[in-house]
Length: 427
Ligand code: AMP
Ligand code: GLY
Image 1: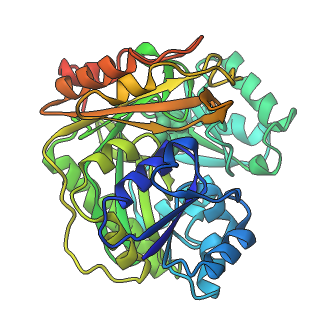
Image 2: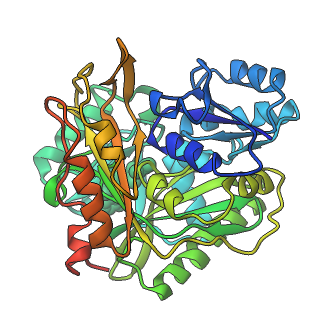
Image 3: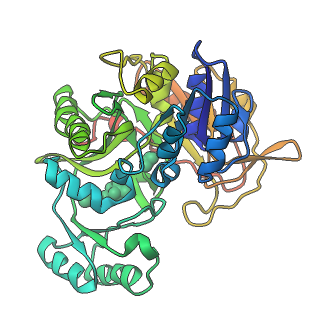
């Protein structure tokens, strides 16, 4: 079959890498793709938010299955457009994508459906937020309602920081219409884990667990990023906890969305805090996590094209997904300045040497080709991934390969997985 992957990051590179292993896939296209995918897919220069152009392309080329990587086209309604044209596409409709597109929709949905989550208040102005703060204390969490590229979450620790945050939302109006309403949440503590499943609208098949490291700095310090590393399994969940999350969060969500008339087809991602009182959902994403997708797909045994096609056709023909026992780890190499302003255009050295190491895969996230050389072209530049018999070994392989790759100002967190390996992780 002919498959089109939409997106240009490390997640989409990993999706293409996995789809290429499928006997069912004859032709693979990526829009817009990235230089790392050139040997796997034909690159199509259409941006992810050009929904009409993407649908025209899929119609012209008789694409049999489209797989959407990032949230933006989903929230814009790409799935509705493709379905209206009779094209098979894997992802949630515009209505179902509200689980990520509106944090307030997600919270109200969880409240209605009894999905465990923290307490919250919706604030329309600074006074409303101050009332909530008196109720929840400090630290406290404030979030823009709409999509804000991961930058719309604030966790002020002091009165002063709280007032600064209110000024950002209600005076500066930094997030415009994405923050006409602001979500104020109690601050939860515990170990964070990501649980992702694939849904056909009725059932959800869980992927293996994974853990993402969101802060730029070691020991989880500094600003939030899209993710600086990940591994699978998460290593911090018992089988019982994973089962509880599957029942109370994943299944409940898929059943609730179907009940409310917005059946959810796609990757369903729950970002969870394992609190002393049990799991609490912090957020939903309606897509695979990036970088969680990379280590997860390295362990997936199934033919990804077949699984996604079944889901897109609204009927799984299988009961579960299988994952290799090996552990996989992914390290993000980021550009100088990320996550604020990333420096770009630097030639990347050592890629081939790193790739030659056994068990290592390198997915491109923010690269470009200039004068025949691969250069940095984004905040998160490369994902260096490796497998091993256990997490310690997977990390050793990944770090050994990552050390071979250089450019000026390259950032790499040295403590990905460390607390899990040492058994100090909570939860
Ligand atoms: P979100 O995009 O909603 O997942 O928020 C980004 C990050 O902020 C999460 O990965 C958590 O580290 C943190 N966070 C979000 N909500 C809360 C909360 N209610 N309590 C504590 N930390 C939170
Ligand atoms: N790594 C977190 C995310 O994809 O949202």
